Length: 104
Image 1 (spheres, rainbow, N blue to C red):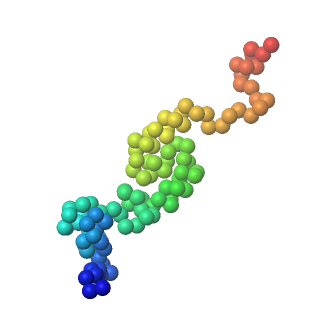
Image 2: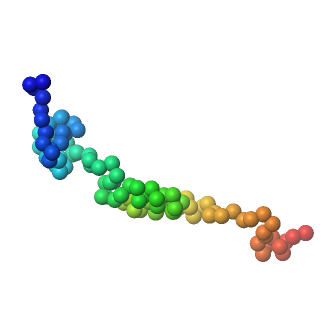
Image 3: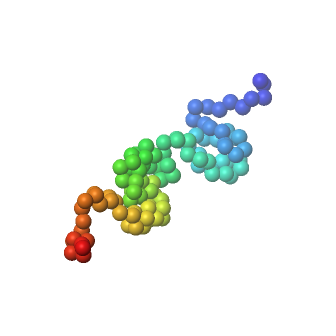
């Protein structure tokens, strides 16, 4: 393959046009298209997606993982939805004070 293009260890291919560009380049110098992040474990704000996943498992109901990833609007939606949903349903047999007073 005499026509193949070789890239060095500090280079990568543009995801749009295929040109060889610097590995740390954010924009292709040939076509001008912004390049996606190369690491699959890092999100847009440089935050660790694995850590965000742990936040989602532990505190997902209140949207901590969305705030951590910099998605504040989505985090607020999670908070608003959590306000409308009770965190723990009452245990059977328990009655609040109003139910005890109005009991026949």
